[in-house]
Image (cartoon, rainbow, N blue to C red; front, side, top):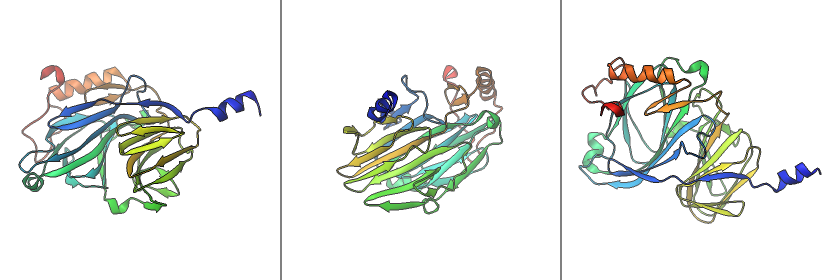
Length: 302
């Protein structure tokens, strides 16, 4: 065995650990794991928000995100509990519930809102979930906008020794999600219902594990609620839990170039972002049917 092989064998499977700070957005806690100073992206993921868990009493809106625009990215929304009502400029109007996935492709431009339905407003809810942004490949940044929804029952899942796996995006653990992503993308709900372990092979170049609840151990190191553990490329990794825990495995192929981010816009050039800013300010984005009165202004116009 060469010196390089020895060094590789002894290397930690963990590249770094990001610990996002909690923020309060409209009455419920949000943790933003990406982008971070130490790591801007994981595969195609350029933005990662964890909201809740929080109990919303009857009569109080749990989600009230007015219409706002996106370009050159896809949003992926996944809930552990609760409900969010989604509308967009394509005419989509539907609720997302636990275990479902919403995949909204912005492409050349889309507008959407996320609200609390009257039924949920009346009874209150326990809200807990994730929303991430995935940058589109360069040749698809200006594609036609689109929206896809898959119910929980459509996503492949299985139980492996007390570890329940649901494949939200990608092909892994011998299962393939029906979600059609723009580039190789990995997104898996890993639910430890009690003590257990899970081996993760290096099938994707860039991978990370986000701890949504509970605690896991990787290579003898404990990681708790809110930790984003970036895994070393090529490393075989074993996740261990001594009690119930919920983590998301995320990653995919590296992006095909740099991306710029401003507010709700992601693009490969600053010029494209400036055009999107002007288009939103001057009302050139399509409106959201059924939610046409309000909007979120550009930050500098607020």
